[in-house]
Length: 448
Image (cartoon, rainbow, N blue to C red; front, side):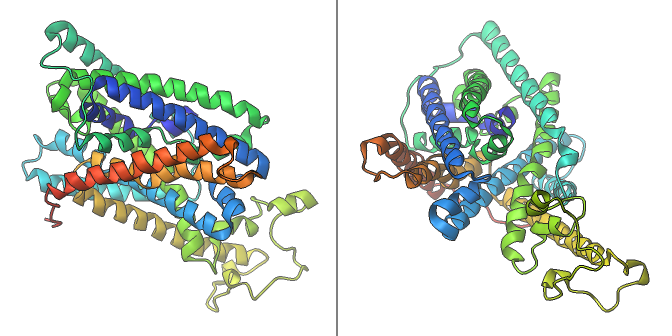
């Protein structure tokens, strides 16, 4: 549960506290966390009622195929935004570490680093399954713990040696304040990874205490990083708080390495659902996302119920009209035999899998070069698709499953949470970013 919440978004929380003030930032973090937990409860209840095993399936049961498409679109946008932010973090940190070693322009060096990172991350993203990266979540959790320890330690040392330098703002409201709210909401997004946990739980009702405990653990990390990161630098804090620490600080150099490890482990896990969704919609007539139908080691659910699995037996009829089973006339002799159809499907699936993986990676590399900092991408993602997935969709889907109208007194709280998400996080965040971007020239994209 903690792994589905904690991510690199924690690095932008001190910057968000700098836009809201310390007390207001803590208050907003607690309010959004409470609302996020409530919408998580709604998703658990809706999954229990409908037996939906994915977020997209719940959208389909609520509003048909357009509900599924809208949910898939929002999931893709949010996960791609996270991947872009992670690519941007790798580019900034590795460039900072290599600047003194390689005497070239920092702008050019950053773009070369992003290109190199994209090649490596694309290779990890092209894996058939993510089971090989199952231990990556443990590594990522250890990296977050170490980063939190470093930020808190340096913050405490600074307060002990120098005290509070300057004016520590508790409350502030300016045009950037609303733009900080989506950053906090993005850091508290866990709803996409909730359904696998619900499917694995024997008692669905047990998931609500798990959500509460997971959020409390993550809130402790967020409060420590946000408070000590903001108190150390105050109005000078950068969108990525790690960039504030000098290069002579050896401990923070290790922290930078931990950040790179965190985002490198998380990038393939976030890009994998995007790859599956794109495969479903771009290659609808050749559904390799349903590859288990042809793989003897991955039986169908219907076959498992009947006690059979795997490909058709030798004397069983085969649907030769299925385009995914199309046979090339130039098949080598070693591929002819009882299972040659499976081998041909797997070969084609590998090509498509690698293509989609590097397509996603190239998209993220382009925007990582163009977008100036992680606050922009995380904030915009939180204000748009994050608002829909965290606040709007859970409330709307839950009310759709009920027999009462939306204005019934039982739906007052879900309606209020939905309106808060749309007005404060959505419209307010977009307006704040419009004011900020309108005063900042958009960077020109040149490769060299």
